[in-house]
Image (cartoon, rainbow, N blue to C red; front, side, top):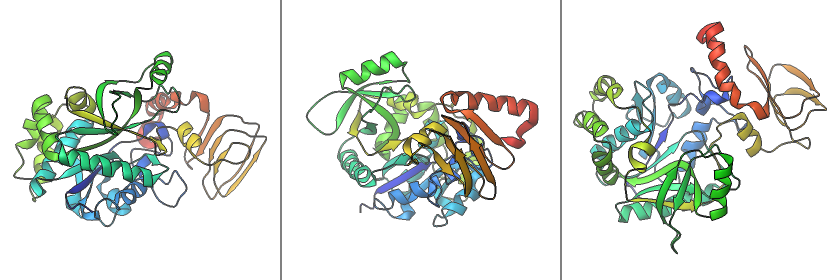
Length: 358
């Protein structure tokens, strides 16, 4: 186990496409959506323990979730929980993490990963990361894990890579979510991967990239480098972090730098972005249903996701390809093939009923 290996888990999002289970007060990463008895953030934390000790794992979250992080990950110290005062996308939070780790360990080799993804083959996942860590330790490289596509999915960004003989490929370009025809073309070439948003890089290499490609973010946050890992850190972040540009690390760094590499990977990955993706990635009964609840009778119901409060009896009949989610104060019943409408409908909920149900 390399003492210079660190992990930053990004856990500040709301997961609005998982409404009504995921809400502002308790978002998706703190829910047991896989019915394992553990939240997604807990599963993610434990997944990285074979790579580094718990004290080398940091959580980047919104400051309103600090207590939730401590509840789900009691092993962590306060210094391991980076609290953003505002949601400014991924580039500022990654720069903040890198500057904090540079102060702790200038040789830090860092994995950055979301808190709410599914990894079905964890052994393969860890093997891939070990290869990535070895590569970035020896090279000034920014590495992103690319997932070998299994279908022409329009919900993911794509990575085009140079097809050389090695396991680690030079990235040619990033493409944002394509339409279906372009996605089919990408698969036909064999040169494209899904962008999983899982990165590996030495902190020094990453900060060089910020200085070269996103200097405004670097200048704002590096001004407080003497405050990091001290009692003055949060006050500095509270004042200056909201002034950083709100931009993703893909736009700020990865699409501009010329030292970008990828490892084509297959380890049963899903970003678990929607109810339909949870249904797709989970074990289902003989009728194709994913049912969570202690007292559920599903009659003539097929290919549906049903999530019912444990103290409630639900009798459901005649549904096909539906989402049924009961959260006690909210009941959602919606066609699964129209779930992309759910996020937009939360705006109507807010307009008519305020924030109590969001």
